Length: 144
Image (cartoon, rainbow, N blue to C red; front, side, top):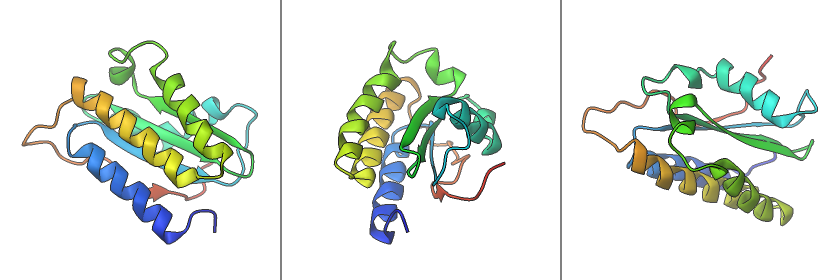
């Protein structure tokens, strides 16, 4: 198993904590092999398959990781990309890479989720009537 149960719990807690302050939806998908050479292209496929492009405010975020292929990507929906600073995702990606190089995948994902959540709460603050549109669990099911 790539992530221990404790690591999975830490990642899910980071998602839940981040979503307490934002209407944004954060999802993590982990698979062993990236079936394409391009992690961003694969993340786009996963993003659509998991329906992250169907949130009411178009404010979904996907953290995609293919651990055996040593590839990962962060993808935000169009509502987010319109408002976050230029190179925002690249900054988070570069910080996460430092964790991944030390094989601290849970720590890297937690940090990235926190950073995304901090930015999302500025542009998509939590409201009393917000509903959780996307489950907070880590997706590992095979995706065509």
